[in-house]
Length: 304
Image (cartoon, rainbow, N blue to C red; front, side):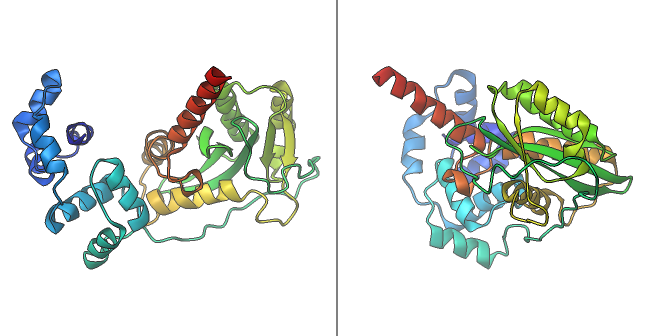
């Protein structure tokens, strides 16, 4: 519904800017907001009309700005349709191309792993099988570097491979073992997985540390680590870091640690987990993919 979309954008745009673009009235929005009795006949009629190029372009610009340039034309088409606007791939591609609207440039970021240590390492039990059949079967973890004017920060995440959701994360100024134990603890409290979950990481000293290995034992998880020199052994997590840096960090300067922390929280908790359309999930967000799976499981049990 157009009114619902307008409601989500109120902190960023004025009603007098949004309503003309969507061809709805300010009074209609206020009536919907007050008692849900908007001018539905008008909305149905206008929703069937093809938006002019100018209005479609305004919508694309608004979404591009809202999502901070995260989407190219394929995801932009799906986002427009999800918000109730008919959009064809050729038309959206043309409008974005002609007006210089594009996704933030892709860059490859080197992830450094401190594997030169004498700590015990685990076998690669995952063996690049990145498609578990249910949630809380396989989690992957990794660490990356984030620069600010106040110095480096280090981000550790825990990813559930089933729906590619970031279930745990930690951001700290030092890359010690507590950064990965804190991320794992957050993930465990959020999901409370059954014993036997496979946790996969690289061979970094943080993951091989006694503190982290003890935490895995406390949670009755099985440890798996990538083979030495295998850059594909933890590909989904490294891909997540690339997306985060391309879509939120590249081209921006972060003056303080607090600025970076706020951006990281917004990307993970507000955008990525709940809104970002993921190609591996049929262009659903991780949260929507999980909700749809849980609904299907419930219906199957009712039928049985």
